[in-house]
Amino acid sequence: MRTASAGDVRASVRFARDNALACVPKSGGHSFVGASTVENGLVVDVGPLNGISYADDVVTVGAGAEMYDIHSFLDEYGRSLPTGAGPTIGISGLALGRPGNPHPRPWSDE
Image: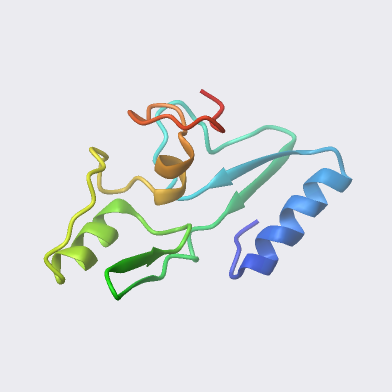
């Protein structure tokens, strides 16, 4: 399911739950281990939700933003984000601790 809004994501997750399907998020789609694919399930592609804004020293990043775009955007403000990630990795996978992330989170599947 390619999403265009948070409501689309919510509807996708509910559909997967109601139909007993595995629900896998896809952000940038950069996964050597295939973490953003699933058989007999639903891939929720948040790629279009890629907005980035900066105000009052706070950056807001959409779930589908890729690292290259984030770094390029922040560079305009003399800011950076220590990620250690490739340019096509989506922020969602990095933030949620997907496989291969050097900074796993407690709610991760790692």
